[in-house]
Length: 153
Image 1 (cartoon, rainbow, N blue to C red):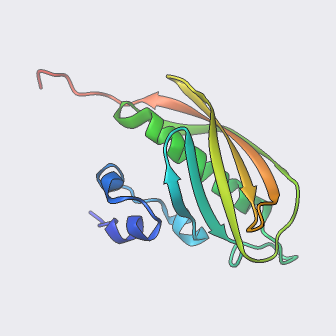
Image 2 (cartoon, rainbow, N blue to C red):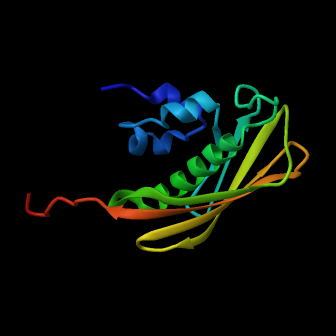
């Protein structure tokens, strides 16, 4: 079994959440994209991602990178909402790109729109270091119930 402790620390995951993520870490793509978590709750999740290393051929942040940040934040928030009763599965994501960025740090702020028993929907706003909106995304996750062991087992 892989020890993800350093990966979790590097991504900004507080030690109190390490046990929940100890089996999976934060995921290879999150590491490759350089995503760091600043706030973590089902209602609000904030993370950053560098532009450097995540650009397209024109030298600006790749549109798919916006979506990776949005899906990461929205799915982690949905996972916190589900807790041990379920696993979030992204079923829909869409984004509008408002402005390009060629350098610096992007901040994604994920806010819950709906936290239900089987569905969550979050809006994720990506901004530059001056607070200008770069893109707006919406992600919906299905909460798939996980099998719970019987009390008598």
